[in-house]
Image (cartoon, rainbow, N blue to C red):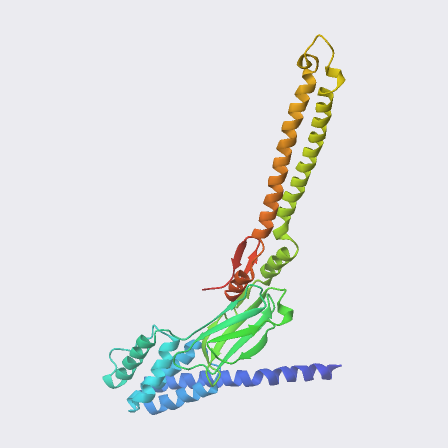
Length: 342
């Protein structure tokens, strides 16, 4: 019974070891590069920083620092072109980066050229995701003017769970990711990372400790309400009330006709008195029932017309539906509900 347990532990250790080893190498090499920089040993700074970069697994802050060290060492060793490329990468990750003004112009000049590059380019490195209105897709948008990103990694997991499924996306300006069926009816969390060719994090949305949350329950309830007649509940109530009013109108109309028959009958034609004197109560019934019938007819007709107008107003045209879908919106009743960022 003990052997399977040892096998499972061994498999787990084998899976974790490569990532742990890469992280250890990167951290060790970064520390060595920092030490070499403090000792003004630029060849060693460059070699150790490059080793740390190629080890992969660095965080966004570590990656930015590695590019700074590589930029400074390359500039100090006379390679201004490579220095500028590293400073461009560092500024893409950290727009607030500032070099020490006491550094020589030989080192600062490539940095200033990199700043000029981003002043012209405008948009810094960024990645973000927006859930569509029905919750079936994530639209991932990437800004990468310097072409630093080699792959985009998306990690999905059910809200509250530590287990996440990882997906690799081809880096393009807009990526449409179909959310797997098992996540479509439950709230889920995601971490979105843009990585360089070595697997270092360049920029991310969310983190393992604080992932981004998508509330699928909101999409499901909204779709269910629309599908199960939320838009038709009010029109139906108007229609039922209107039909009831028309039925009441018919009742009072019949009573008015009976009263009119009595008014014109022999009961009100005795000699010596006028018809008004003989059947004043009958005449009163004729007029009161007539007014009530007209009132209920008018009210019932107005309620039925209102029901029809409400139904027509709540039915989206194909053009409006297409425009709403393209913006990540959905039509609910007589209004439009939109989710996402514009």
